[in-house]
Length: 226
Image (tube, rainbow, N blue to C red; front, side):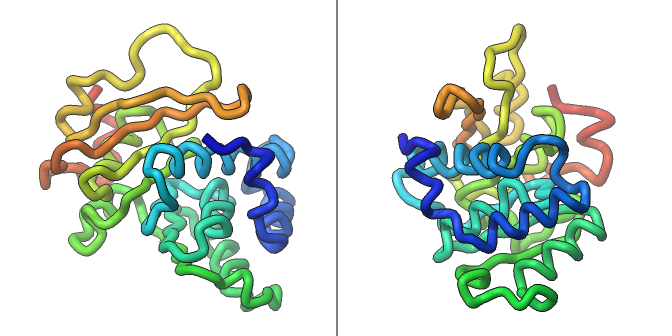
C-alpha cells in the first residue's frame, strides 16, 4: 500500500490552490489544507491497493468543498470523477474551479472527466444511468454508516468498492453489521489505517443492490437499515 508521502508529488498545483480557496469560504472545516490533502491521499492509497489499479469511475458522496473528490480527480486524470453534493454554493464553487471559467486554470486542471453534480444522493442513486456504473464510491463525512451504505451501494458495479473515512482508533460496537449490509449487497472486507494517521472502512459490492434502494430522500436517515 502506497504511503501518503509517496503520493504527494502526484497532486497538481491547481488542487492545492482550489482547496485553499475552498477553506477560505468555510467549505472544509478547521483541519489545515495540507492535512486534508493527506487524508484524501489515504483514499487513493486504499483504493489502488484493493482494486490493484486506479479506478475508472468514481463518485465522491457529499464532496462539500472538494475533499477528497478534487484530489482524486488530480491523481486519476484518466478516469471519471463525479463530485456529488446538494449544496448550491459548494457546487457552484466547484464548477467554477474545475472548469477554469473564473480562475483561468490551465489545461492541467481539466484533465480527465470531472463532473460536478448538484443532487441529493438518494435521487442520484435512483437514476437508471448511474446505478451500477462506478467501481469506487468515497465518503468522507457524508453521514452515519447505514445512510452511507444505502446511498453508495446502488452506484457500484459488482466488485466495486465503497471506502468510508473512519475514526483512526477502533471503537466499541459494530458500525457495519453484516445483516444490514447484506440487504444492500455489500460486504465489509477491511478496516485500514494509512500512515498510522487516518482510518478507512472498505466495503465491496458482492451482490446486486435491490431496486428499492436507496429509498426516497430523507428516509435512509429517518429509518436507517441498521
